[in-house]
Image (cartoon, rainbow, N blue to C red; front, top):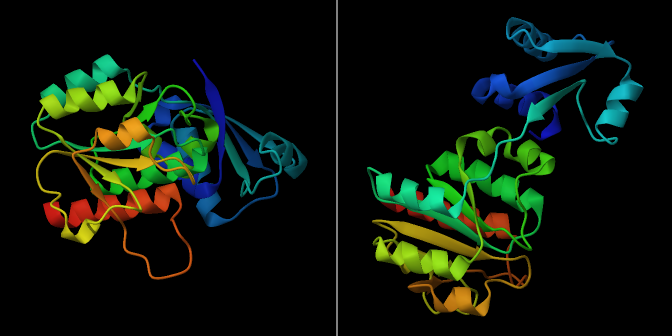
Length: 245
């Protein structure tokens, strides 16, 4: 079991909403008495979670100086699922598949942000590589604000092999690439799909790109050549969401 510290009123509230049983301990600022914090304290007490009131200096130390808003909790981190579990979950899906694939995306903030969007649009899971990629960490959980508990994260050893198998299950693999000729607004996202975004700056690896059924670009008119990975993923996921709904 791995514990991580999650802090901030919104993040703690999300954990209480989705996985209160994963909270092991809480630290509260002695001199904080605002209404939102008091509501969280009442919920923590109601869940019989060990609660300790401490000085701000201790909270600052526990949060590495980040903005904790007077509350920190120790949470059991969700575990990533395996490639075997991914296959079983795909087979068991009662509706068209909707996955996000992140090819060697290493920034945990990007993974956390992608999980939040994935939860919002009903993605069935986020697929990441085991090596050279962000996994489920404390930072991911904090940025995800509860979505790390609601959206499965699958870690796979060989992404190309995984994509090839998904194709056999009728899943259309759509990759985001700046050099693509087709705009995402011209593409068909209906049916079973897996959206693929590449690493920060580098984009998708060659073999990943070659195993996509379709490449699409996000139209841009400014001077910046590419979007942040989580922003690009959000644009793709919401276009798929729009078409599916």
